[in-house]
Length: 262
Image (cartoon, rainbow, N blue to C red):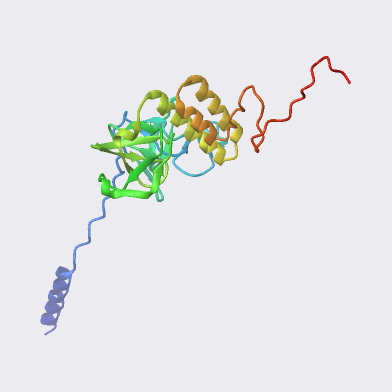
């Protein structure tokens, strides 16, 4: 009887072991999201800090062992960077792209500040442009306008429309014939973008210096004068002649001749 009881216990143990589920395989490590092909280019879409390390930390250990600023440079909308690695680095909730700036500084930018992809071109508008939610005339959005001198990054075309990246808010569709793609006009729009940023951070004098630069480099581009007024430059007073009072009457003239002395 004891022998039979022992055999029964062994059988029960074997049955229990066979019914257990095998351990689940370990979940594979998430792949780093693709940014763009290494060596390719991307556009900066908003004013962003190029950082030494992919983190918001203000200071990081430097090569000499002392802490240094984590900010290498401030990049502005419209600047082009070269993609160093084809994969982003995920730190917390942020994805960071390893890029190289135009002055050959290697650093990290938040991926949300980059416009990646082939075939992106630059444009602006010279007069207020209507915005469409979809590439259809019936999708006109009466609440949105693109103001003159706005730097636009053209993502794709669907004639007669173009989809453009704007500095804030979602992409918009505009009529392609409203876009100005000349180098001079686009350059003025880039200076205007930085000028607006300077005014927002309380540096209007520096914004006006960009107006002077635009005027010296791109004389004859009508957009320059529009941007100058927007950035706070006072229009020059009319040269020569009398100043007419608001009533429209000229000041009374002294009719005595120079020889008539009191």
